[in-house]
Structure formats: C-alpha cells, structure tokens
Length: 380
Image 1 (cartoon, rainbow, N blue to C red):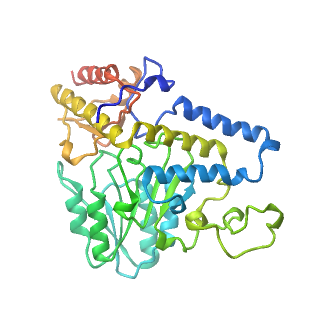
Image 2: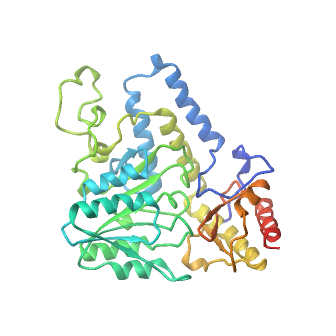
Image 3: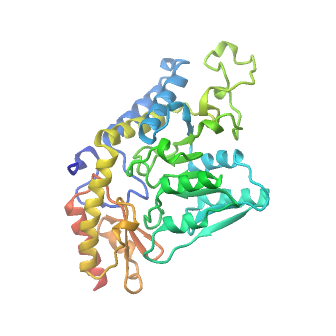
C-alpha cells in the first residue's frame, strides 16, 4: 500500500485552520455536503418525493453500511445515535441475576449508562476493566471474561486515548464463554478495518459523524441474524410488513420488514442524512479503509516522534489505534492550553491530562508543524 496523498482540496477547510480533531467531529467533504443538499431539495419540493422514495434512500444507505462493516444489508438498522442502538441491544440481551457486563474504565458515557440501568433491572453487575499506564487493553479484557459474563460491551479503541482492543480475540473469548458481544465503533469505523463476519458481534453500533465522515444524527446498527427476530424499542408504520403499499397502511399487520429493519428508527426516511452518509462511505471506500489506517498511522508515528522531541509523552504504537495519538505531559497541563491552541487556529481535544490529536486525510505537514510549534511555545 502507498500513502494516500492529502485530500484537503475536497474539504472547505481554510488554509489557516489546522483541524486535528476528527475524533470530536469530522468536517463534511464537498461531495457529502452536495449529497445532503440534494436530499434537502427533495423536501423543498415534496410533490417530487414519491412513496417509493421513503424506502429507496434508506436501502441505499443500508447497502453502504454493509460495504463498510461487513455482513449483509439485511443485518443493518438505521438509527439516530449510539444510545438508540445500544438501547435496542439491551432490550434484546436478557441477563440473569448475578451475571456480569464487562466494560472498559472511563468508557464513553453512552456506552455505560444503558448498561448500568440494564444491570440494575436484571440484578446483574458491571465489571470495569482497568489497565496500567502503557499497558494494552486486550489482555485485561480477556482476563475479565468468565463463566459469569453475560456480555462484553466495548469499543475497538478507547475514545480518550485510542487504546486498542483486539475485537477478534475478544469475540472468540465471548463465544467460548457463552457471552454476547456488543460494540460501539463510533471512534474507529471508517478509519480501522472491521469485518462483522470475522468478529461476530451480537450488536454493533456506530454514529456516522466522526470517522465515517457523514452527517450528525444518523448511525448504523448491526444486528446478528440470531437476534433479528427480537423486539424493537419503538413501533412505527414503516417497519411493518407491506408498508410500501400506502393504500393499505390501515390493514394493520403483525409482521415486520425482513432482517434488522424492524429496529429502524421512526422517520428514518430522511434524505439529507441518508444521502450524506452514503456519499461519505463511498468516499471512504474509494480511499480504502486499510489505506486510511496506514496513512494516518504513518503520520501519527512522525507526530509522536516530534512531540517526544519537545518533551511530551507519546504512547507505544503497539497499544493504540493508528488513527489516534494521545500526548501526555511530564508535569501539569499548561494552563489554558486548548484556548491557546484555538487562538492559533489549531484544534485538538484535551481529555483528562492527555491531548488527543486525531488528524485525517485533509491534514498535511503544515498542520502538524503548527501543532508542534504552538506546543513548544506553551511548554516554554
């Protein structure tokens, strides 16, 4: 594989802005904005919006979800958020009293609150996996899986520092223990290769507005075939069998659309979001997910070396996802550092005592050099 050249010309990012914060929210490429704009135009002229269009744009997006994450289009539901998708998983993963839900320490809140409530309701308990600084997550997660594990709910990489979890190893351990696997891939899908057929999660959810580089307010939920006869968290007209025939909507039916479609959110037929998300995934697939990971990984290796050269701490590349770089400080974080960076039009995120740097293909060497220059000044 060869590195992907800078793609800045596909984005409306001013030259003076060094946006190194994709893990916060990705910018929209021009082609994604254009696709979403075409969706808006459909709503502006509803007389052109045919009954079939309530389904065609949804199915087009569903096919892109499968192309990005593996499985088949039938395995995917359209959801508005990670919390919605995880609520579906909780509804369909019963726990026995005394069983355990395994999560990572300091996991993103949306991937914890639902499990706390679920554990309370079922008489189960949360097991929080911790690791020492510099250690990998995977051995700690594997050690936590045992005969009392009901399911494991983890990301592919930690949202704060990019610490990596080997999902194939965790998936195999879950199957051996008879436990389910629930994944939140919002901070990795689109930047790290993932194949649902290899990992075999029970449920996987990912929002589209970060590394999938799509609009806010839309996400994908993978549902393993064995769970596709489950119970949705809402009941809407479009998810029932035969809903394509508008003349018979009040011939109320008990059956659902096939596959995971029964779990689709109501009012899923939102063309700006669906068309924007599909265009973003097409762009990612055109670059190649493995190529993206390798290109971002090479840049982060160079950035980590430069950061260490000015006295910052950078994690071992073997323990973190290649698209994430979390920089530590030998002492206290300089006062007002995020504001100082922003004043110089350098945008990153401070998470705890770590500076989360998440570049993408729209960044170049000039952006990275500006980050290091401002940090060097701040460190004095």
